[in-house]
Image (cartoon, rainbow, N blue to C red):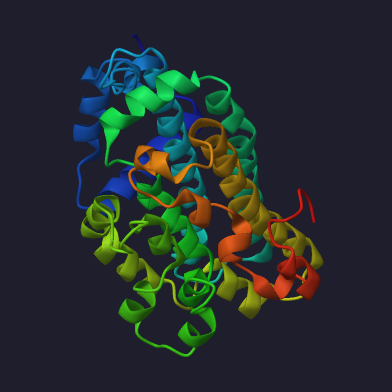
Length: 313
């Protein structure tokens, strides 16, 4: 190596690193040893490609089941992207600046756009007969059981606004998160048609996620997206339009894509309801049934009255 000197830039970086590790009571030299002996990073190791591509484990021999699995995995990854942006706003120690709020809300919109536009990949990518056959081997599992989507909902608005339409007004006066939780709209979508009892699909879902949902509802009671808007950006026209877009994408366009899929593959015959894990999709999926909106104050009375009944507002 001879007498080669480090550049001023490298020396400055080393000094900054030394200060960083000194502050943590760590020896910079030991970390440099680790860097010296570590292998070069590869794309496939960093992204965990081999693991990712091994996560599709069909339960049947129908080829289109793999499409079904892959698409739902992609959907969950997009939900994770949305939550990544949302949580940096609703879980932040301080209220976000306008530019930060706007940037992250736009990103959430963009992710929903991709989800909505991509749904045809699954709708047109599976043979209906194959779907109805392999779907029966997956019971009682259902896309209804997406915990990440429920977390997105909880982080977007006040908890009582996620209750069923017929109980929402009463729930607005309720302080107990547990009591509100019992009236969430999606629970009506997983009750047995004949008896009104909770399906196994719903019981499994609640067993796994109830405590997490209730904790998040308490955690973001004053910092969910709606509260951040009302307390910091109310009347800001650009933010208003972005949140209207988010609301419409999440609560009209996204469920309508699911409804379109259910109609195609399950028709409207209650006798095939078992293929959804018992979820009552005919009452649960159409937006006009539940009238869920994260930001009701951003819509006119006419828009609310026609929620989900028009392709565009």
